[in-house]
Amino acid sequence: MAKYIVELSEEDLQMIKDCHSKNPSIMKAMENAKKEN
Image (cartoon, rainbow, N blue to C red; front, top):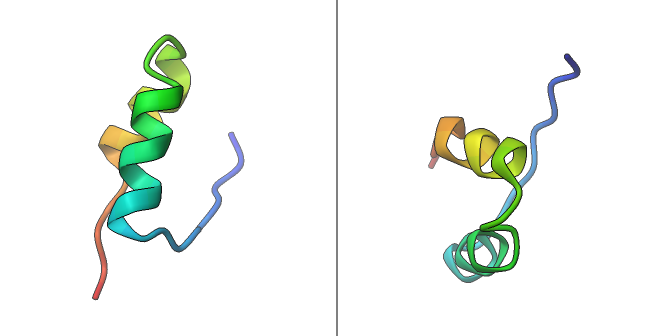
């Protein structure tokens, strides 16, 4: 599987979770996403 690194604001992250709540693979990826500062 390819690995992607993206930068998201908290608002973007929440919007993605809201919009893709029916897509298990995206939700799994977002759950596994690491927060970096």
